[in-house]
Amino acid sequence: MHAMDGVKAAITRISSEILRISEAAINSDFSVRSDESKYQHGFRQMVVNLCQLMLSADGNLSARIEGAYQWGGADAR
Image (cartoon, rainbow, N blue to C red; front, top):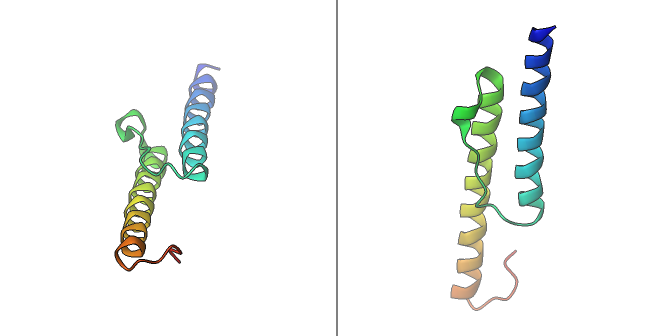
C-alpha cells in the first residue's frame, strides 16, 4: 500500500504544478517557472518542457510587444 501512496503523492504534486504553471500562462504571466529538481523521470521532463514553453512564450511575447512599440503600431499581431 505504501507504494501506491507514493505514486498518488507524485501524481498530486505534478498535477498541482501543471495547474499552477498553466494558470500563470492563462493570466499572461510567462515568468513562472518550476524547480525541475523536485521531480523524477517523466514528471521531470514534463516540468522541463513546461518551463521551456513558458520561456519561449515570454520571449516571443516580449519581442512582439517591443516590435509593436518600435514600429509605432498599437496592434502587436
